[in-house]
Length: 202
Figure 1 (cartoon, rainbow, N blue to C red):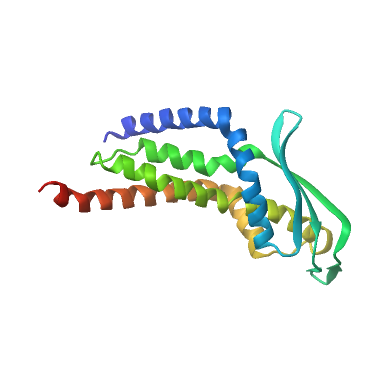
Figure 2 (cartoon, rainbow, N blue to C red):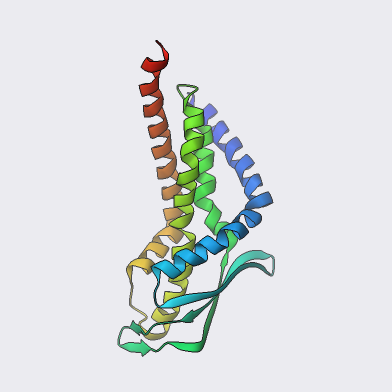
């Protein structure tokens, strides 16, 4: 396909999906909040999610997390003991969590298929890929915000795998993940369609 035409398809798909996210992104994320909270509780035994909701901060729509401490936390040489009265509140822009899924869907829709059978295969593979993109982003980034509070207060030069992962996502990793997921789904759909061709030609 002509590169100019491919770019035009991508821009059109990006605009369409971006408009859909602006229209329904908040409602969709609202339905995902219980799963995000559950995932955070599973990956972090030190904090517990007390509330997770979507709210407005000025002109921005943000995810607001309130969390407590359920187990002793060691940060550098500092020990923070579990305290049922302790509370941490963080907010993160909601739109950031839709960056990878938006790019993923735009690339998937824009990239031409060699066989018509690839389109339903892409649609089928897109659902688990979207779930994976969201699962690798929102729970970890929100949890990393909690750990960054401890790090900034007691170990400013410290790091950890979850903080490194969050930094990667925030510095362009979301776009890499979205593009990689689109490439993987496109390749798998093409390979499966190619294998089906000899079967359907008889």
